[in-house]
Image (tube, rainbow, N blue to C red):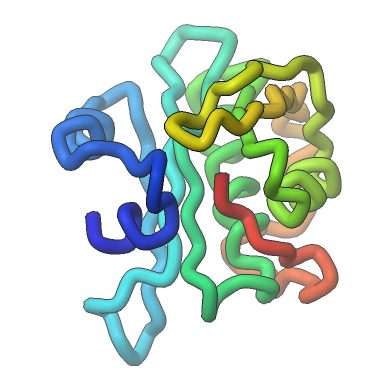
Length: 163
């Protein structure tokens, strides 16, 4: 929770909300730690994707300041999309702060498209959220692509990916 509070100062999730999400079987969370410091979290990301549903939602993505611009955020998103596909999800949605162009670029590079705006979504800052959608590619298309967890990501695709 310390990382959540530090990265999302004014709109951090509550401890109760985060615990509820990470223990929900309809959710899938990933945590990235350095191999030599397994107690230090560099990033995490969460997906709400009920099995049998057609739509999923990326609930959160957080990447520490020092881990940004190395492809970690994009790799986490790709891994969430892979899990969504396994669960039968056809479309993945997310909200991203309108004042976070780095994260927006990551999502656009990964194939998300902007489909709407939620005015004043992030409170108390009263910042708009851009709503983005990705049509989950079929498994055949995904097989042709390298595994995002195993493959290094191009550093140019690694803008900060925090919402």
